Image 1 (cartoon, helix red, strand yellow):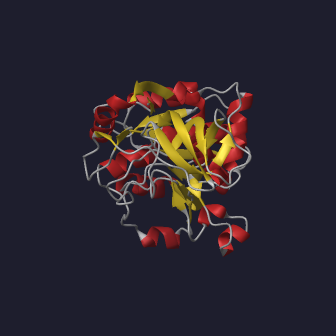
Image 2: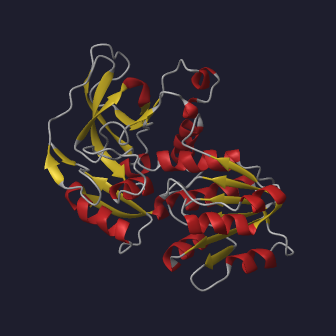
Length: 338
């Protein structure tokens, strides 16, 4: 079958590989739509080191069950599914405490095992979720990123009418904007380098959009917060510059939630954090947020169609991922269709 195989930094050609065979408690899913995540782009560029070649990336996807293992009784060929791509053991302390996102033995489809940038993928039965007939395949590919942003906002202390700053207007930052609006934020300030993404952020409800190429984010935030900074900041990039921006706009005693992890290490001003008593919370993946995200899209409570800016065949994947990594393609969400 055809698949995009990551073979090292800046190398992800379209290859012919063997068709997957399910284990006893696994199924094979024919991929119908797979979103390109920012972490896939960073992995392709060799920035994060979390993808070890050779591997097929892709963890935001939905498809049709084609083959089932002999211990799978509740799914059948032809079933429409969306995949929650984080495998957890169910027996470690984190899992037993109900925080499966912190599983000590977790493994991710498209991160540790072959993923969805392919015609088909092998999936553990426990990761399958039924996809309602009313949902499109493109909507299925948006469930996972929405769940990530939903958990990030849930882990922030955002209260009704709080001012929130979101650093980064990529898919995760824009979905965090949508969630912050639903949670009752009084004012949302979002920053980015892309005029296109900031225009989209305003269409999604941002009160203030700041292009940091020609505006001073600190001055803008202070102007909207009586000079003291925002109580809640969500950092959705994970680069040194954006981490510094987040620290510079949070008020004393405020809270920063970090979703972004583009760089594995960044330098921090510890004096700023300590003397201003800043609380920093990391957030990763999701627990029950995946099911909630699926329900939110299915019911129409959250509209995600405006974020999908390109749907392309799998064979265009190598060039699209390259262009996203180089910054020559300014598209929020690109979805590949094998």
